[in-house]
Image 1 (cartoon, rainbow, N blue to C red):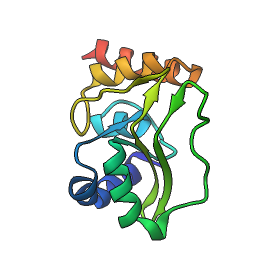
Image 2: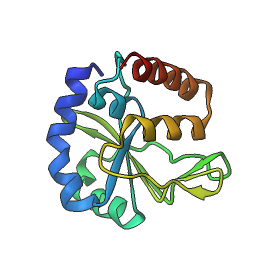
Image 3: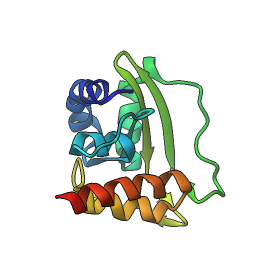
Length: 143
């Protein structure tokens, strides 16, 4: 999805996130785009929330729920409630109770600042995350 598509998707789903998933946070490429980082595209918008928040979204967004599988339970990432939605504005992944390497991911604010996004990318540590971290570091260094 282009930056404009991500911004529209976020504008459309933000009221539901506030109503059903609070507290919630965005991570990943979509969050970086919303922060203004030079990321050209995102596959979807990644939402981290509580298990209860994910369940409320699941009920509210039931018509958009896809048949996608959750994250592998014994992999480095595990959500107690994972769901992928194909909304009319684009795809959204919701991770309720997300754990990274066995520890619950603590995230601050709806769209955490670049420094927090950088911490999360490094914590995830996959090659694609480290590539995004490099883009984010260069952007932060450029001021």
